[in-house]
Length: 175
Image (cartoon, rainbow, N blue to C red):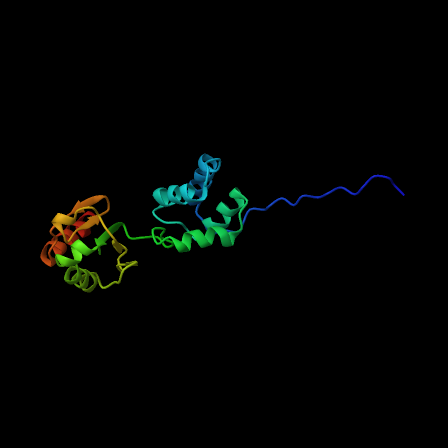
């Protein structure tokens, strides 16, 4: 009998199986490396991933969990709880339509119905050609000029159905 106690084996977390592209994987790992020492690092990392890729890919979740020593369920819970995080690749352009009270009072319900009909999608959807995603937002801070929307990072006020059509036509030309 040996007086030595058995060695304690610490398992090494292996790389999760993933369908991430090399670019996506690199963006996820870069965000983790840059931000994982920050207090409450999970949210800043998820924001950085979405800023870089325009969404948080499903297969990024196990990778982030591994990097932060969290469970996949913990990371998935945060991604699925916050409506801001997109879990599918959005269109080339994102239209955020304001649904706050001031815009509602100035005609946003009619604009919403028109936008959904024109694009043939609902909120969180993307047009068949992949050009445009439609997202609700609950205030753009443009209350006096409602109804408002934001296309990519460009705020638009006093949007009528006719103006919406013109803006969408411009997006399709640029896509």
